[in-house]
Length: 323
Image (cartoon, rainbow, N blue to C red; front, side):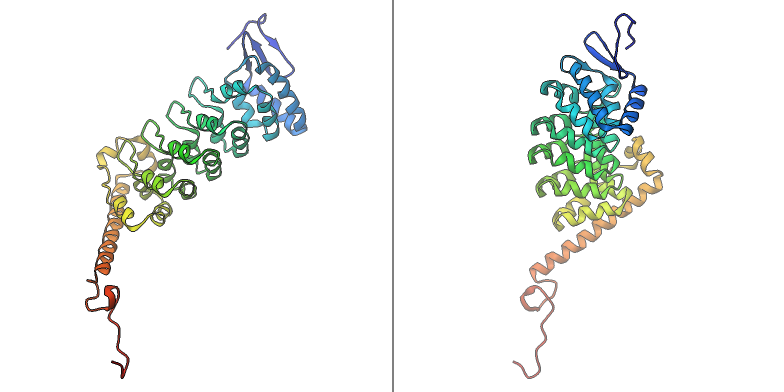
C-alpha cells in the first residue's frame, strides 16, 4: 500500500487517499481514536464524519474499519454508518480483508463487540443482515460460527434475532471447511448457554434437524458435547422427546483412527483414553434410553404390570369389606 509522496494526501487524522482508495496506519489510527475517545467522544464522531465525506465517493481499505470497530464506542460508529450512502455501506460491510476474508461483523464477533454488532445490523434491512451474516472467511466461518466458538451467547442472540425464521435456520445450517455448523462449535467446547439460545430461536423440527447434522468426521453435536461437558448433553436431552433422544444416542461414533486424523479434536480432547471414555459415555446414554423405551412400550401395552388396572400401573388393592 505504499504510495509516493506526490500521490499521498495527508489529513488531520492518520489516513490518506491514494487514487480511489483511503488508507490508514492501523497503529496510529488506534492510538488516535483512543486519545480522542478518552478525551471527547463527540470529537471522535466529528472526525469520522469528516472521513466519511471521502468514503461516499471512494472505497475504504482493509484496516481502517477493523481498527475503528475495535477502538470506537457505539455512537461514533453509528455516526460513521449513517454518514455513508447505503449501497456504499453494504460494500463496506461486505468487504473481507485480503489475508483471511474477515468482514467487519466477523471482526466484531472476534472481539465480543455486541453493541457494535447491534448498531451494524440495525443500519441495514433484514435481507442485508442475512447477506452480511452469511459471508464466510477463509476457514468457512461466518460471524455466527465465531461467536458460538467463543461462547458469546449475547452476540449469538443478537445475530439470530435480526433475521426471520427461514433465514435463521439457513444460517445455522452453514458449515465451515470441516463441516462444522455453529451448533457443533458451541457443543464441542461446552457452551451450553449458546446451545440454549439456538434452541430457543428455532422451531422444534429445525432443532432436531440441526442435532442430526454431522461434521466431516461423522460427529453430531451430541457426540461433540459428550467429549467435553455434560451440561450440553443435558440441554439436548431436555429439549427432545424420548424417541428422538434414542435416535440421537444410537448414532454410531466415528472410528478412533478416523477421528484422530483431525487435529482440532486432538487439541481439544487430548488422549485416546478420552476417546474411550466418550465411547463408554455414549453407550451408557444409549443403554439408559433403550431401557426407558422398553419400559414405556410395556407400560403402554399393559405388559409391565399384568393384571393391573388399565394396563398402566400396579394392581389396585381392595378395601376391607369391599367388593
